[in-house]
Length: 382
Image (cartoon, rainbow, N blue to C red; front, side, top):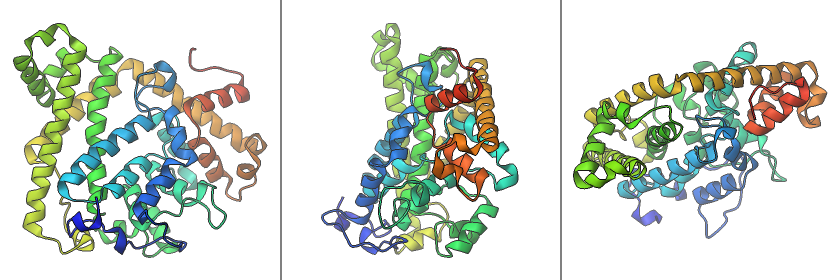
């Protein structure tokens, strides 16, 4: 989408707040296209292919990983951004980078690192994603990190505790953490990625949960948002009752389409009502990108179902308990013997943070190999 076709409240790359280290333009790409390209070529992005979404990576080849999740978020976000005349390139860049700081083993790894780092500033995966693109990627001669634009960094920092926001603002007063102090919103593009993230989670966790045999379409039928579209598909294609895979895929396709249409319609009405003068004016308003109240309530009900039936399923909780144990034992081992890490991590002045950085950057399978090397034990069955 060219700048001339953007809505006036979209993030215009020609008016970007810039990078922390000034760089010459790189035509024909604009700043946000350049950000996206840097993210795709980063080491952290490639590692996402072997990082858990819900199911540990070795449990099956077809389950989502952090990489496939990020691609799905980007696809949903770009579809809605085009309809809303927002900056598609910025949406894509934020979507592809939003999980770069996620630990191995998904939220289980994050919870374990947070417990390990409780006395050392804590661990937040959104903040870690920003840390990856600001400091931990080592690719360029003139700066650490990827030196992304303010707008992309702002979108990556989806959540941030008050304590960490204050610390970030001390070092960068006008940086992406300032909004958590001021109580303002991120760009509309960042708001859109947050919603796309939620849509992608719901759809692919249903797909993976059914594929794994942990939840069933019969259970899902009682959830209004899913049940409505499943019945609609069967009304149009009765023969699909004997083809459960096709029935599930078509149900999820319609569920996602309905959410995109609802999001676009509801957000268009909110933008028409508030008429922000530009992207910065939109930041001063309440969130303008949102679902209708009815769909928001249905999504919340679906999330409650997935939380109780899938994320708390005994098979999942057994894996996550082992994952937390593995991450905690890795942290203890590296803290006791820093030389077991690469030299640049072992020599860092802040050893606890360096250990957390090293572990957070691991893939599931590398973490398992390191744990076996350091402890001689295998927690997961082959």
